[in-house]
Length: 334
Image (cartoon, rainbow, N blue to C red):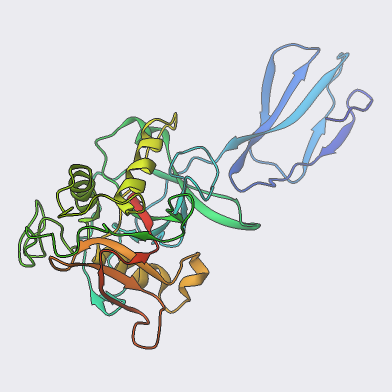
């Protein structure tokens, strides 16, 4: 803050500029002789003609800015925006994600990775979000965060599906097994079965869009109990151990919003391709070549998403042996 001496009654030009789109101009404020602060102008920002008062020993005039808290509407898709999942006002690879479905908007496509998908549009009782900008990976990016009413009201519906920004590992290996001992031991799998809310797309896990969270909870329980061990045992490199570790870390954090991470179902992976990636390269979004889903394929195998592997497995979904090592990326709703 600078100071200068001016004659009583003289007129000076004051200027102020918004340099951060996350804030908006509130007005000019005046304080005379260390008295009560008064708002003297609401609108002029780039150039304000100020008249120095008479009979004053000291005067302080300053521009004031407020955080931009206007909530977003439903007339625009926010797919591709980042999501400030822990609501701390920044985007980090460890804690946040990128939006791949906006449930307030209809799907742009009906298939991805050669797999069809659909989801139900929602426009009522949604959480409120604020659009902001920040720097991530040395670039200025758009992101959404929850406004205060959405943080406080847990009954509001989540509008977005969000993909995490980094793969899950065991600390040593970049790829993990689905469930190493499970191949041939998943005798309860029914390809035409149903789970709660998802009919005819498999049980005890489903291929359906929206089933990833239930699938993940089911498989963590089965892995913990050793239900598919057969004559083997749980492996330290199985994905369900490390997904549980991530979930426990979030639950014990002090964040005002705690995302419930899950391994995407195979239709959710198809949506990532169809709605987020589109004709772009998967690598533009920090993704690797092949990922596990949370969906079983048979008593022996599980579904996986191949963005790139070889000429026969580029841009498709397929099955893989539960002992195979692939990348794991988590998703959540927001």
